[in-house]
Image 1 (cartoon, helix red, strand yellow):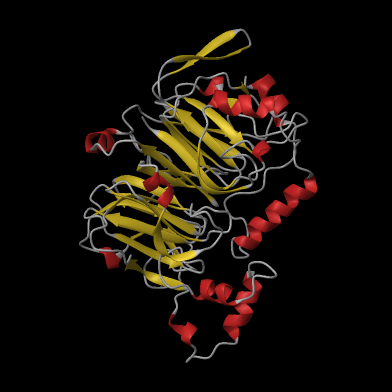
Image 2 (image 1 turned 30 degrees about the vertical axis):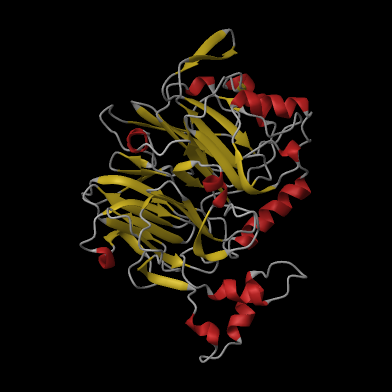
Length: 458
């Protein structure tokens, strides 16, 4: 049986109801079914919606902790009485689903979308009609949502039944059906999608892939790829794109200011360009963080490149060392402190050997018997699954997103011991910006691992 666990940033109840008082989850915690989630919130008479000041502070923290970069792909969700409006217009209701754990998880900074695909079962009634979800097709939302009745409630979306895939941002939910892709404004009152694209049932690519290009969870929603590339997977960073072709070639384009394109420079790239340093190596998986990238070869080797200020590449981090050397009495150093300290260094300083930006792919240094099969990049952390069912994490850890029962960052891969101690085998991992979700089982059966459906994450 497959189960999902989450850890890290939980300020909006993306992992577990905030009534538990857990805004930082330092150890993996089992994701509740929809009924369990709703029941716990109801029984605890959930906390009221966070004030404007608290939500503004959270947004400022996000901007600061993302290295002072502007929020390029996602904006903070604005105040609205969204719950009342979508319930009236779209039939969005508190979920009465007996949702099993066999599902797909998509995450943004403040929200989690769960695409259920476990079994056939009646869904919530809306406007006198019963809705059903099939092997894939029903979406429930968790996390930030502002209204007078509070937040952190699991919501079912009856109108969006028969979904094949989904992706979520702070403002939009993008959904794939067999014949179209739609984008819905979560915060708006309209009863129609804000964007739609027809597709043929033969198109099998997972979001954000779309015929002839890819979709993004903000206007204009669709971007063309002006090259004849047969794409297997595509992953979106904050300002860059990483694509894996069906022949195992890695292409990147977009902003290159942090080396995240892997072309050996900090220059941007308008169109897809093959990562030359990986030429001759067939890759099996790719992922894009906010300003770093990673891929896994057919042989289980992992390569990383881009920004490394929190050790998210698994390479010695200059900024992480500076933070470690500073006093903890005033909390974690911000980027202004780091830049000031870096500016005072001399070329012969011992910190000069540490890496802030890696513009070429670097082979991750792990013991020789470790082979990776899946991985995911968060904003400034990275997680990877081995063929033995272990989960390794590294990078920024301020919210417990590394799962090591601490808020310490790390620039070396470290096994999440919780799963090993519980004799769980990790099958899949999905990183949010500041949190991590792992799908696990009690068996290491290789057939189950290969037959389990794992869609690409963004």
